[in-house]
Amino acid sequence: MSEKNKIRALWPTLFGEFHNENHQNIKKELINFFEDYKKKNPSGRKKSSLGTENYNLYESKYDLHMQKNPVYDKLFSDFIMRGFFTMSNEANKSLLNNFSDKEIGVSITGSWFIHYEQGGFVLPHNHGECSWCCVYYVQVGKDATTGNGGTYFQKPTPNRTTLDFGSYYNRFNVHDFNPEEGKMLIWPSYVVHGSYPYKGDQDRIIISANANVSILENGKPINTK
Ligand SMILES: [Fe+2]
Image (cartoon, rainbow, N blue to C red; front, side, top):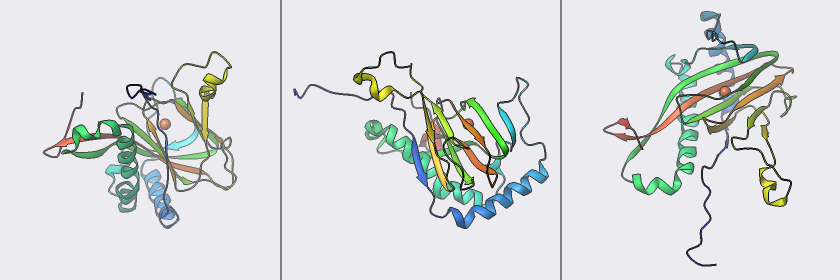
């Protein structure tokens, strides 16, 4: 093969799966924090006037990282923000040399929890004003599967139009992930996703967050065009 020949993967859609080894040590404290929050904010996030994408669940406001809960904040600094940093570095790895002398910082633009009641689910949607998004499974019953409380992602590219082998890699319209306690998924903000209804022994509780990852100058994020 000529040295001039190249194969490029353009616009890669990366999905990260990370497991928090420390999850069982913090699970109870996270749930206590959410229960207290619910008592103080019984109506949760205000529903959009355009209707709701949610069914049979409680969703907090998007300000959980501003509540100064030490366990929640440590989960973000030790695990969730590192995951965002890893994903951004991987997606931008061919460009990292351009910024080798710069500092890179993760900022959380919103974070919230969802407590699903029996059969609760979220319809397909995507998140705005961020580059990466995550879901972190705080509690799910052992009976949870990809189809029972799993998270699904819709393919962001057009559908396959032939059934040849050449397009075989492009055959799925949806990818499902199995929910597991302490697992976190990270994906680019443009990917449409939702959750399958969950019925199980224990209510499904998740944290979700949006993040930007920025080059910093004098400690402040700058735009990278
Ligand atoms: Fe979402």
